[in-house]
Image (cartoon, rainbow, N blue to C red; front, side):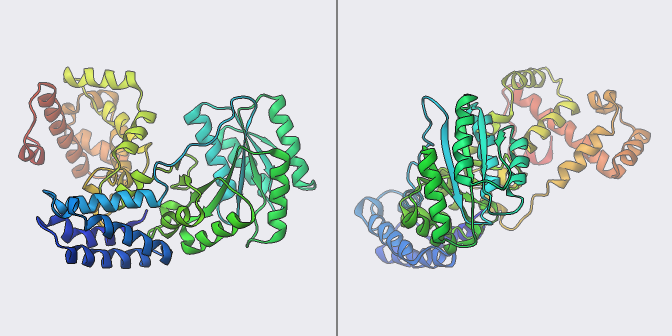
Length: 442
């Protein structure tokens, strides 16, 4: 996400970052490049003007220009201002202390609203441990009810629906009654969307809001539409009060115009971002972390959170014990590889490491390579996975045939695994291998 914007901003700040001394002219030149990068990213012109003025004002102050490392200070100022632009500290959903929390979802047709309902339901169930129900009140679009039932089932949420022949306002009120009777923690109400903002859409939304008295009204906008997404958010803000934004399709947004403009122009924070097609590709939007990602500074906190969600503490302790006793097997390696893959595409994980994202550039880290390794390992017998040393020529030919690869690929995996075990053994004994050793595998 934001690859184009990130590359341009990092390029604009590259010269400033490496300098030992800076003048006001150096900062002004960098800001001209930053301004151009933001405009090309489809960020609103007024937002760009205010942003660059704020950065320039802070960056040309004596506390920055006269500091020991002024270049790094300027980058920090840009990161701080980007964070503030996207919402500062962000905010959490308002959860009711008694009775079901009602979340009303709004958005245009095609924005990904119904899918976002399912993703939010799964997030609240898996991350917060809440009992979630969905109300099918989008009776405008054909098959919307069926789509909500499908995503609801996949998310593990109950779906309240009465078909398509009812008044959506009545359905919303009935669903709230059901949620109260069944003591649900959360009710997410999916409302109708249209191809454009109109009076009929807003009137229906206002009526549903009046009947259900939601704790949060969330607007789903398609981040890939850039400035158009911001225009939609502004129109909704004028016609129907909403509390926060969900950015859908953020993984396909190379520019970033919507994310950098919507808070400044509507005053409403971005609460969540949809980062892929799968239901679990949905996360809290942290402005500070997103700013760091854009500037190539990584996002270690999100990476740690993803790891904590996927990795069992007891399994981690058992793995540590095996490494210390030199009992790490290919079965263990396969299990760790599967856990890493469950955290998302490998390239996205690497970009969260400080400095790594900018080094990747256009290089593609292919997850199919992991598929190949998995195929090789699963084609081995339990005895071979426990003790790869017994894998001789005939065994390698059998494994290659079973995995659809070749003998060279099997030999390379066995060799690399042996090198990895040696490094683990050294590290378990408190000996940190040199970079040369890591590179050579000695």
